[in-house]
Length: 81
Image 1 (cartoon, rainbow, N blue to C red):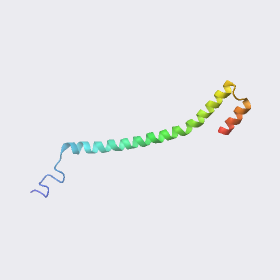
Image 2 (cartoon, rainbow, N blue to C red; image 1 turned 45 degrees about the horizontal axis):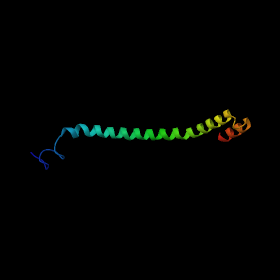
Image 3 (cartoon, rainbow, N blue to C red; image 1 turned 90 degrees about the vertical axis):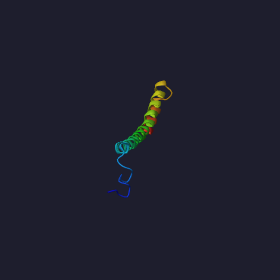
Image 4 (cartoon, rainbow, N blue to C red; image 1 turned 90 degrees about the horizontal axis):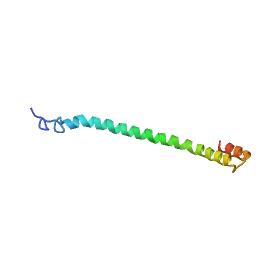
């Protein structure tokens, strides 16, 4: 006995690519979304710490070149911390 859809089900039967690749593509989509969120979070956390580190490195370079005195170095380093 045929149903309303002509005996093939609601979407035209058990067409193999939809049955196999549909769930695989859905899983791949969610893996890509989660991976993107993780990369974005890592980039934010890396960016926040680098500015302070770079400022101290520049300060050390200036002290090493003799551009600033020991007192200036200590005062500026204290300001950065």
